[in-house]
Length: 153
Picture (spheres, helix red, strand yellow):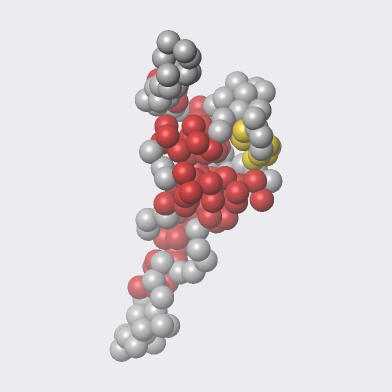
């Protein structure tokens, strides 16, 4: 099973925000640059996370995004279910498969999917960020452009 880029971006946003010191926020542009994710793609993920109430977003000069939920209250399973399209791993009904009525593959794949989500449901956002030192792993933020001055137009 491969997660979508939307889920990946959503998880990265939540993980990044979960490791920030209390009161600190990030911007969508900053996260897009640090994680090398197209801004428009990341913006959609941020919008979704805000809509479901896991982050809060403020616009404007002092705006940014921050977690609105405690990392220990949010499971990875919740996030993945919220960001992945619904459906089975394999869609046996849409194909004209001669084995469809007697094949045991769909049942096995459904059990595997249930086990996958059961593990994700046991893992919180806090668990995931507790095992990684993001500040050491992330590349430095892109350098700010020097301000224009009479000496440096």
